[in-house]
Amino acid sequence: MSLVLSVVVPCFNEEDVLLLFYNRMKKACDTAVPSGAYEIIIINDGSTDNTWQLAQQLVKDDPKVVAIDLFRNHGHQLAVTAGLMKSKGSRVMMIDADLQDPPELLEPFMKKIDEGFDVVYGQRKIREGESVFKRFTAKYFYRILSSTSTTDIPLDTGDFRLMTRKVVDQVNQMQESHRFLRGMVAWVGGRQVAYQYDREKRAAGETKYTLSKMVSFAADAITGFSTSPLRLAIYVGIAALFFAMILMAYVIISYVYFETVPGWASLGCIFLMFSSVQLIILGFIGDYIGRIFVEVKGRPLINIRQVLHRDS
Ligand code: UDP
Ligand code: MG
Image 1 (cartoon, rainbow, N blue to C red):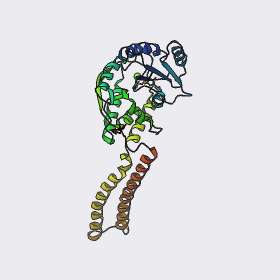
Image 2: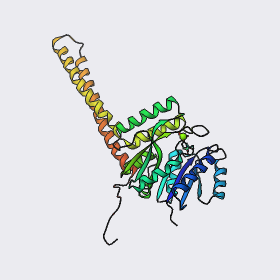
Image 3: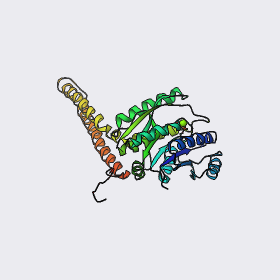
Image 4: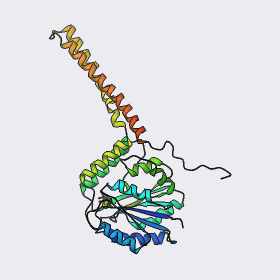
């Protein structure tokens, strides 16, 4: 029997919530997929608590549970990637284990896909129980990201989403090791739709995203989806050149009409000219590095949704 749905759940030290999550998710799956053709994939991302023992027990008790144990902590995005690669369902949901994303939204998400969408992603209306710092950084992070990136990455959206197999296959083809999944899914394209929801408090336990993990996550997002910072030197260089010309006029006028220290004018001109030209050239080099970066990532050239042929 082919699976209708795979639920991918990354877990890092989630012993406090895993069973709570499982019970709610299971109910939601039974409602949304009455045939029972689904799997819940729990990925243990190098936990140091009892998460793996709990996952093993769930596998024993429930044939619909698949548990994947990673050798060490690889971080949220790679843990989810492991789940995406092992998933077999014709639709895949990514969801956090901490119940901040309500499993019950599976049903409305499924309806959206039935309507013909490729991706339904949860968009947060409010974020409950999160610090002012987290809310502030999250808000501005998404806005800076969308202004630097050429991919249209939706605002205030996490990884909580339901995708069709075609989209998951396309994402799985992307081999980049610094993964920013929500951007990668957006990059695939197709019909993607937001579903607004209130993000709840973590059901139990602490956030597993430390400040350093958040910073490297943000860096992966910006560098993975934009090469524009590399080109920054061109703009600064052009501004500097403009400024240099005004200054050079001043230096030459001073040299011709007023008394100046010998050597000052020529040194001033050389310095101004060359430093702005250097910046511009640095920007060009940056542009080439950006292109090399895009090539090295080796993403699929074209995202083909389907090929239709009368005899097929
Ligand atoms: N997570 C993971 N590996 C990590 C960090 C987090 O698998 O290194 C999982 C975690 O168990 C949870 C999800 O990623 O299911 C989101 O993490 P968390 O809720 O701590 O992040 P927040 O919601 O605070 O941003
Ligand atoms: Mg959370």
